[in-house]
Image (cartoon, rainbow, N blue to C red; front, side, top):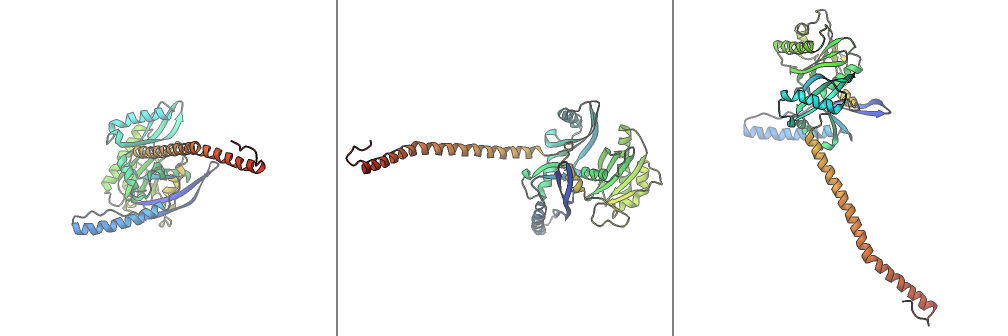
Length: 365
């Protein structure tokens, strides 16, 4: 989910080899009306509910048995950090301890996970992400399914990152700046080679001012240069921005990232028919689907979904136990009442045979 529309991709794994069997876009999701007139609002809401029901069916028709849902950067907080451990449980606790003081809500109301980027000499470099659980749950609005259909929750931008890596756009030894459109929002991704350094939502892709654009980019670059070795930007990549005013701000963007004026941006597009000058890139949903098989990838699956699934499993388990007890009980009743009857029937049958063979003899008792 980009924040405004859904796309989908089906990925299969055969002996470690990943392949995409199909993918596509489902168009913009209906937007809930914001009106004040009661009568007009009632009509608009009725139309919205109708459109939402139709769109939900379109989305759910693409679901497989196991699905990964992705959420936009505008709902997430990202941070790259290093910790002196390679144990996932220890890393999780260290990262939570670092994040909790800056969490926008009580940690119990947040979902939290991380990608392991690098591990060496007993330490790990990770990218952790956090979101309010209610923001993740809201993504189910367009999914006409129960949580048991969703196995993983990933970040939309990480699907794009996977596609850029697979396309060879993020080369080792280079600092890269990627400006990408997610729905109506603008996201900046900075990497050293293929390793992310920073990810941030910086505003509206359609309406952001030149000042806000420069300010958001400059803030991100200052953070990167303070936390990592400062180096020149070797590559500037625009993704899905060819029909936005962002491309008209290239000089300001170059100044904000500290790039040479002669640096030529690379323009990429994930749509089926890229506009003139843009190179094709797979749908971000393709990258998300491929990451579903990566054990080191984050999973922002909400705790409330886990609790709900556990309750469902407990109900199924209890029902199975109850059914087994009933079968044993019925079998025991059948044995207690049926066995004497069967013995009596066999005795009667034996008596009849005896009377036929030995009419004058005593009956078998």
